[in-house]
Image (cartoon, rainbow, N blue to C red):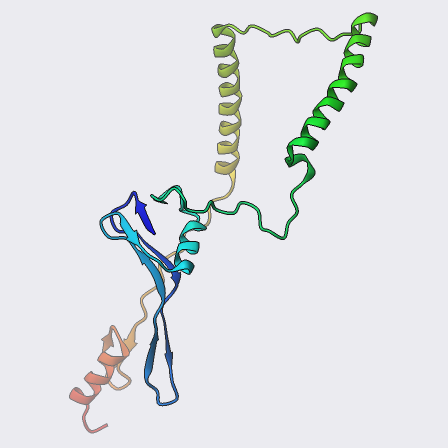
Length: 194
């Protein structure tokens, strides 16, 4: 069977490839099953692949079968019974029943004067629409302004002051350094005996 795709070379995976490690710690590849289109076409005689492609969600959208005798995709699973309203005979009977019930109700309402009048459609001018939009925008802007005032009135977090630089001193000569590593180097060079 031949399938034709809109796209040049799509790939539809039926069974993905997999790898397992056997007892001897060798990697074994499990070959998957996929339909790879080449130049918009895919040919197969495999009934499983044909069934997979005919029931794929992209069938009829991304690709089609060019053979008219291809079976149509199942819409309803076979184990779910067809509802009664989907059969023509039951549908026709229901329509006749509804018509028989509706006609006396309409005639009775018309004879008593209770028939409903068609609803009146209000005509709105362009100016009324513009005015309504301006009112809504004004109220929205007022709400935003109030929100900004409330948020700005809240106390901002305090800015942390920078930490004072820590000073390191030589215990022997009281020389000042930026780090403890520099103090250690100084002690090795200037005071090797201590």
